[in-house]
Image 1 (cartoon, helix red, strand yellow):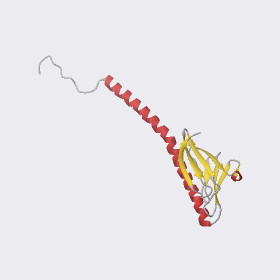
Image 2: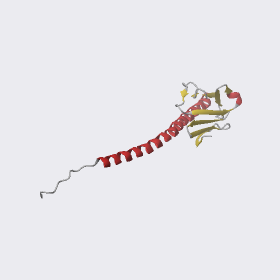
Image 3: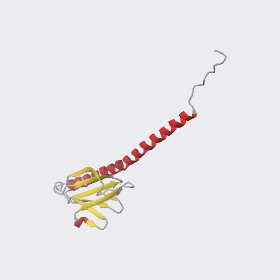
Image 4: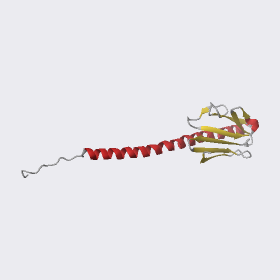
Length: 153
């Protein structure tokens, strides 16, 4: 090597490292916000699936036992209970509303009745978390149970 040349060490300057750290921070904040927004939807959807399963179980019990069976929904405590099962508490942040027959409402508790032929009193149950909501419809004639995603109103 010639006497006047200096060999540069490989690596990154402090400015380059700071720029990369700022970019990583920005990306993390964008992705993190998106993940937390989607978490509301996931919690609500899973709660909806659990409630649909409980409704189908209750309907099945009515058919098998040939006796009327009910699923109780407590909108204040955010719980639901199938026959011979423990009450299930909805996740934090998930609210429930229930539209059912007036004779099946007692204070904060509403019931969905299923009859031995599979029919029901019918109901609409809405689960909401943040801006996400899921609607569970129970047909009165057939007892069919359907879960659909919708916007919170």
